[in-house]
Image (cartoon, rainbow, N blue to C red; front, side):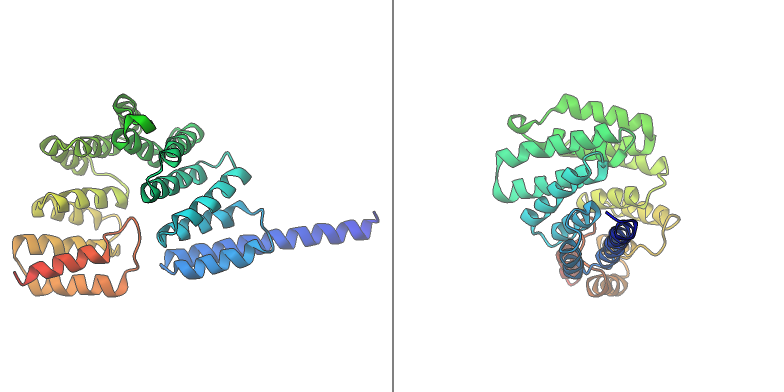
Length: 286
C-alpha cells in the first residue's frame, strides 16, 4: 500500500468519525427539544454511513424510548452496549429499555435482563447515584422470580446515603413508597428537602411524590427550593399550578400555567405528562 493511499484511507476514516460525532450532536439537540422523530431520522441516516458508532445507537435508544417504541429502543441499546460495553450510561438506559419492554410484553425473560443491565451500570460506575437508584427501584419492586430483592434494595440505599445524604433520603422514601408506608415515606421526602439537594431532578421527584399525596405545602416547598437551581425549568409551572389547585387558590393562574405547559412543553418520560395536566385542569371547575 502506497503512502498516498494510506493517507487517503486515514482521511476518510477521520472524516467519517467527525460526521458521526456531528450527527450524534444533532440527534441529541433534537432529542432535547422533544423532536424525537427527527432524532430517529438523524440517527438512522448517520448509521447507514457509520453503523458502528455507539453514540448514535445510544441516541436511537433514548429517542425510541420516548416514542414508546421499546423494541427498537432495546435493539439500539444492545448495539450500543456491544460496541462500548464499559459505558455505564449505555448499560443503565438499556436496563430501562428492557424494563419498559418487559412490562409491555409481560416477559419474565426480558425482565431478568433489567437487573443484569443495572448491575453492570453500578459495577462500571459505583459512584453513580442514578445507576444505584435504578437498581434499587428494580430490586424493591420486582417479584423475586425475576430478581426482586428487598435486602439488596436496602443495601443500595445505604450505598447512596454514603455518597449523598439528600439522595439517600430520596432513595429511602421511594423504597418506603413502594411498600405503601406513606407516613414514613413522607418523612424521608421532607428530610430530603431539608438536606437541600443540588440537583433539579431531586426537587422534581419530591414534588411528584407530594403531588400524589395531595400535599400542597410540601409541593410549594420543593418548587421554591428548585427555583434556586433552575428557575426556568418548565416543570416548576406545572407543580405551582398543582399546588394552587389543591389549595383552591388563584385558579385562573393555575389554569393558565397548565395550558401553557401542555402547549409548549414536549412530552418526556421524566416530566409530568400532558394527560396529568389535563386531569388537573378538569378539577378547576369542580
